[in-house]
Amino acid sequence: MDVTLSLTILCTLALIALLSVEPVVCSRHGKWGGETKLSFGGNEDLVTNLPGQPHADFRHYAGYVTVNEKNGRALFYWFYEAITNPDEKPLVLWLNGGPGCSSVGYGATQEIGPFIVDIDGQGLKFNNFSWNREANILFLESPVGVGFSYSNKTSDYVNMGDDFTANDTYTFLHNWFAKFPSYRTRTFYIAGESYAGKYVPELAELIHDRNNDSSLHVDLKGILLGNPETSDAEDWRGMVDYAWSHAVISDETHKLIRESCDFNSTDTWRNNDCNKAVDELLKQYNEIDIYSLYTSVCISNTASSEDGSMQVMMKRASNMMPRMMGGYDPCLDGYAKAFYNRPDVQKALHVSDGRKLKNWSICNTKMFNEWIYTKPSMIPIYKKLIAAGLRIWVYSGDTDGRVPVLSTRYSLSSLGLPITKPWRPWYHEKQVSGWLQEYEGLTFATFRGAGHAVPCFKPSNSLAFFSAFLLGNSPSATRQ
Ligand SMILES: *[C@@H]1O[C@H](CO)[C@@H](O)[C@H](O)[C@H]1NC(C)=O
Ligand SMILES: *[C@@H]1O[C@H](CO)[C@@H](O)[C@H](O)[C@H]1NC(C)=O
Ligand SMILES: *[C@@H]1O[C@H](CO)[C@@H](O)[C@H](O)[C@H]1NC(C)=O
Ligand SMILES: *[C@@H]1O[C@H](CO)[C@@H](O)[C@H](O)[C@H]1NC(C)=O
Ligand SMILES: *[C@@H]1O[C@H](CO)[C@@H](O)[C@H](O)[C@H]1NC(C)=O
Ligand SMILES: *[C@@H]1O[C@H](CO)[C@@H](O)[C@H](O)[C@H]1NC(C)=O
Image (cartoon, rainbow, N blue to C red):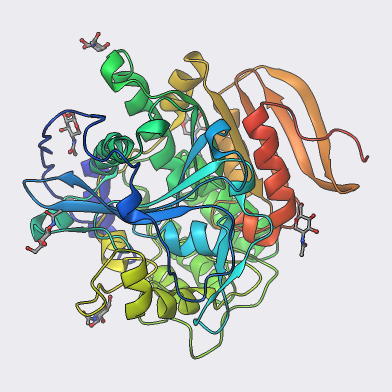
C-alpha cells in the first residue's frame, strides 16, 4: 500500500488506524556468517530444562540474535532440530503474521511445533504431527516488538513496515547461521501464514536479490504459504464474496459492497455506502470466529481479551490482516500467554534471568494498528520468484473467513499461470483432504474443513502435505 492510500484510509475510516512514519536505515556491522563466534553450534542457547516439557529425543535451542547493535535490536528464535537425522534434513523458517503476532505463540505452540501449550497454561504436550518430523524448524518472533523480540531504541517501534521486517529478518538469518554454521549451506525453505503471506515472499525476494554475492548465498529452494494475504484488492473481494456465499451477510449487503466498493482504488473508504456495508460485514463476523466459521468462540474468562485478542483485532479490523486465531481450542491464546510469562519458562528459554521478566503477549495490538509500510500486492514478487525457479506452494483452509479460499483464488488467477494439471481432489488417509490445482510454477491446494491456521485443524493432513512440499511431489491423487 502506498502512503497516500494509507492516509486516505486513516482519514476516512475510523476502523483503520495507520500512522505514517519515516523509514529507518538499518546499520549493519561486521561480516555475515563468520564461522568464528561459537565453535559448538549455539550450545549456549540449548534448552535443557523447559518446565513441563514432554520427553523429546531431539535438541532445541532458544534465545536472542542481535540484528542491530547500534539501536540494540534483538530477535527471539526457537529452533527445533528434526526428530531424526537432522543433518540430512532441510531447514525451514516459519513465520506468523499479524502484523505483530508471535510465531512462538502460534506456529510453535499451537500449530506445527513439537510442544503444544496445554490447556492449564502450566505445561506442554507433545504434538505427534510436529513438522520437525520432516525438517529442522526455526520459529522467529519478528519484527522487534513481537513476543520476546525487542529494541532498546523505542523509536524503532514507530518505524514498522514490511521492508523493515524483511531487512531485520534477513540480518537475523545470517547472524543465526553464525551461531549454527552447519546450517549455512543447508537446503532452505520459508513457510508462513496469514500476514506472513507478505513477509515470506518479501524475504524470499531479498534473499534472491542478495544471492548473487556468494558470501551471502542462502540455498533457498521454495516457499510455502497458508491462507496468505496476497493482493489487497483481490483479498477484499474474496472476503466479501465468501461472507455472502457462506451466509454471513445478506444479499443486500453483498450487492451494496459489490456496487459501491472499489478495492483497487486508493480511496475505497471515501465511499460512504461502501464503508457502511463493510462495517455491516465486520459486525456479523464479530459474532463468530472469522478465522474458523464453524467452531465456537472463546468465552472463557482465562482468555486474553485485554490485548491481542480476536475481539480487539476485529473492532479495529482494517484493510490489514488481523491476527490469526483458531484451532480446536479457541482459548489457547490465553494459555500461551500464561505459560510464556512464567519466570521459570522465560529463564529456560534464555529470555530473562527469571527475575526481571519480559512482558510476552501473543499479538502486539499497537503494532498491528500502527503498521504502515505494506505492499498492496505480492503478485509481482510471485512472478519474479516463479521466474527464478523457486517452488511455490499455496494452501488454504476453506472455512477461514479472513483470508478465505476465494481471496487466494482471485489473487492466484490474476497471475494468469498456465494450468499444468487439472483441478482434482487430493487424499489423506482415504479421505478427500481438499482440492489441488497445479500451475506452471505454482501449486495451490485447499484443506477441506480447516480454518485459518490449517495445522491446528488438520494436523495429520498438514504434515503429509508439508512432506509432499519438501519432496516436490504432488500430494496423493488416489484414495489409497
Ligand atoms: C539492550 O539493553 C540492555 C540493558 O542495557 C542490554 O543488556 C542488552 O544487551 C541490550 N540489547 C541489545 C540487543 O543490544
Ligand atoms: C505418533 O506418530 C507415529 C508415527 O507417525 C505413530 O506411529 C504413533 O502411533 C503416533 N502416536 C500417537 C499417540 O498417535
Ligand atoms: C532495507 O535495506 C535496504 C538495503 O540495505 C535499504 O536500502 C532500505 O532502506 C532498508 N529499508 C528499511 C525500511 O529499513
Ligand atoms: C547483485 O545484483 C545487483 C542487482 O542486480 C547488483 O547491483 C550487484 O552489484 C550484484 N552483486 C554482485 C556481487 O554481483
Ligand atoms: C483490480 O484491477 C485489476 C487490473 O485492472 C483487475 O484485473 C482486477 O480484477 C481488479 N480487482 C478487483 C478486486 O477489483
Ligand atoms: C504488559 O503488557 C500489557 C499490555 O501489552 C500491559 O497492560 C501491562 O501493564 C504490561 N505489564 C508490565 C509488567 O509491563
